[in-house]
Amino acid sequence: MADFFFHTTLGQLLLIVLETLAVLVPLLLGVAYLTLAERKVMAAMQLRKGPNVNGPFGVLQAFADAIKMLTKETVIPSGANRMLFLFAPFLTFSLAMVAWAVIPTGNGLAIANINVGVLYLLAISSLGVYGILIAGWASNSKYAFLGGLRSAAQMVSYEVSIGLVIVSVLLAVGSLNLNDIVLAQRHVWFCLPMFPMFIVFFISALAETNRAPFDLPEGESELVAGFFVEYSALAFGLFFLGEYANMFLMSGMVSILFLGGWLPPLGIAPFTWIPGPLWLIAKILFCLFVFIWVRATFPRYRYDQLMRLGWKVFLPFSLAWMVLSAGFLMVTGLLPGGAG
Amino acid sequence: MMTQIVFYVFAAVLVLSATMVVCARNPVHSVLFLILAFFNAAGLFLIAGAEFLAMTLVIVYVGAVAVLFLFVVMMLDVNFAQMREGVQRYAPIGGVVGGVLLVELIMAFTHWRVASNIGQIRHLVPSSSERTNTAALGDVLYTHYIFLFQSCALVLLVAMIGAIVLTLRDRPTGRRQDIDRQHDRTSADSLEMLQVPLGAGVAAQGGFLRPHTSYDVASVPGSYGTEAWREQQMAEETQTALVVIPPAAGTKGQDNA
Image 1: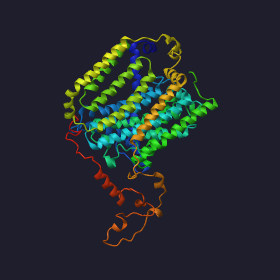
Image 2 (image 1 turned 120 degrees about the vertical axis):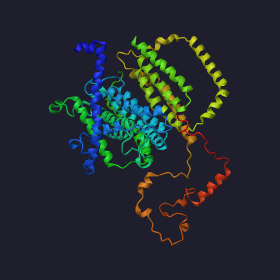
Image 3 (image 1 turned 45 degrees about the horizontal axis):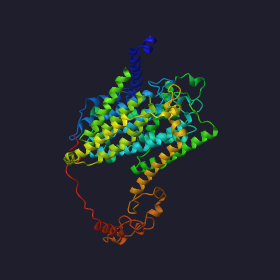
Image 4 (image 1 turned 90 degrees about the vertical axis):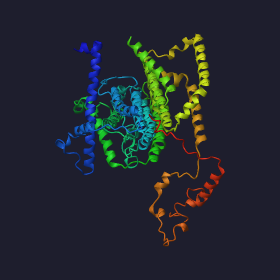
């Protein structure tokens, strides 16, 4: 049986399909339930009950929403660029999915354990802006267009600081392989020695996923609903799912870069009984909870404040930290790799 | 075999999308085809085993440069009918330029010689099994050619500063925000109770109902909204030869499809 999967072409293709399903099915279920969790958690924080009608504790709410979304009519505005209009949500959704190919859920347990895993993640997350920009333009609506432009500027700005934060992590690891990044945290998770970078990365992740308090592209008070104001039915659903899947992805990146990926907090008995993938899932869920917590707590930033934070605070700070950590690693002789 | 098929698929799509960049009528479509071309070039890099270059191509060109391209092109208010009028006029010039470039390329490739001392830099080429090409590139850039690399960076820095110097206009009339000042404000120095006589309007306050002590707009020369500012605006408007032309018919929306 193992021979069939590892030594024949058909078996290998089948194996890849199975691996992909093993990642995507839990991910999509997670996305569906994240929408419910968000409503429940925010409700609890605001002393409300949240959805509680469909099924016990409202657990069927996610499916009710999905069915509602599927049975609605797809409206394409007049003067819209039809092909791009329909292409944008698919792009957003599929980009949020393909990034999971490199996320390791255990030692070597990734669909593709590639050498440039971090760069792949960075590339995919920087592509996310296209779905939004194309949606904004193709809708032929000024609100959607403004939302798209805002989002493009915001994502490009915060990508710079995300890149610099990743560079300082890579300095301490000496490899671009995500597996190696997690293994380098065997002794101490990077969120402790690089605590400020952890915070900068998390806030940039909020901005990158257009989440509160940086949800200006949607800005319902001034832009109605931003770039997806003209979308309905399945196309809207894909945007919605893509956005939540992006939250999962960013939480995954935070977990892998700073919270030790699949590693248990301490390498001793009760912690090591729990398998690695469960640790990763627990960390991702924790990050997602913080995402929701932030949304329920902070008011929205003004646009100039957002740009100021990105360019004038995070960028110089992460640049300085990068130089500082490079110098520290060099002086203490902890710089890994060398010629390798 | 598989590699060859994938190569030809990538190469064919690359050439096709590059052609479409030039041929597409809508500039936004052109930029999107350009992005497709970048992707296929990245795919070719991957086939060649240069995964670092492939990823940086996507991150830098697709993730940053093309986004800004798209950003600008989407905001352009292009009149397509006018653009098509010029095609016949400029086609011969474009053809000549293209022809010259083609001839030059052919000449360059037919006279291609590999330098005789190529063996001396063989140590820079990674033998892929033990060294990742990220490490190999880092070695070349940051160890062997660090000074050239640094001077490239300086050239870019000069270009960047030049762009900023050319476009930055520090006008006092801009309503710029000073975050520290905003945070330092208290109600004591920003709130002033005025006794305004009924029916007299706010002309006595200089047209503003605003505390003078904390936010003395009138004291800043050229501050927005003051009398001096209005005079300056008038002077500027009468002196400038620029005539405001209303935007031409044919907005973005109508030409979208």
